[in-house]
Image (tube, rainbow, N blue to C red):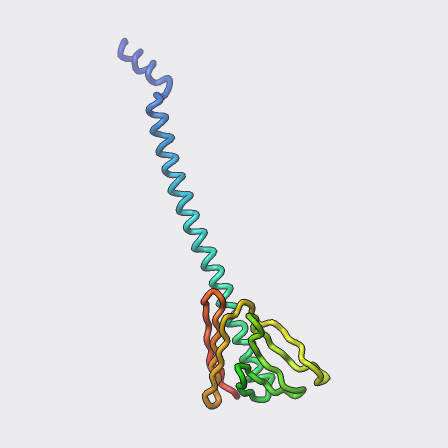
Length: 152
């Protein structure tokens, strides 16, 4: 009977040592979860940024390919620009500062209207080998994309 009373009295609460142990274990688990989440979030943001950069580069390359092969009447490379003759006049792709821009001839043949293809471009290289244009675009962050465009 005495033994039962001692157990009952002990079962009424927790000791400070048990409380400290439980709090330290839970804080350790929370710390690991928060650090893992922050590492995952940083890598996620980098992947999303890289994905959007590379997507922008390849969209610009596809736009140039579309104009060179389907809307233009041939093309040639001159002074770092891609010149695309059209029925209205010459359109061209050029690096203007750090923006890759497409300058197309207005419908009436007077002047050019420009459209930005890609921002923060460090390098726009075009090399021609026969009927193939080799285009390389590098952004300020060092992300690059290349494409070989065959002239139809």
